[in-house]
Length: 146
Image (cartoon, rainbow, N blue to C red; front, top):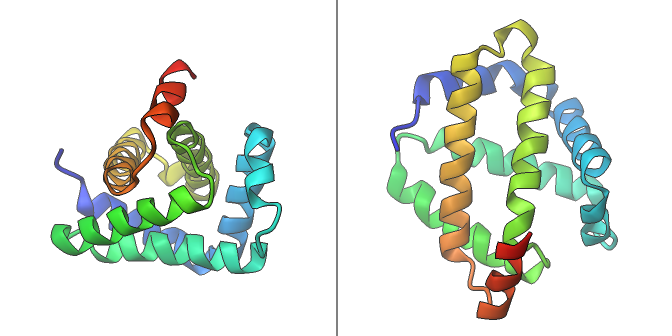
């Protein structure tokens, strides 16, 4: 899948100055739309978690033109997320909250083309993270039922 790197970079640069508000809104959207994921963060320092999220977004956008670097980083991130209790069925929830947050912050700049660029990017991100994640077979079967 070819990503629209220019649109991803341009749109991300528009929200960068609002980093703290953006990540706060992301978690408000995630927990509001998917309250079942909130217990996964029960023992998480949310101030640090917000920094990690934004750092991950920066890593992705800064390495869109370096697919090997990005692939390795995202596979490693996926492997670590298994240890946090993140399951394959959580990925679409995070993606939904992320898209909703981008839409809110980009306003009129959230065009169908920008939306599609982020949908494609998140699909690629999720795929790479899941490649790096090593779930027991029974977990993968449970995820297929949801």
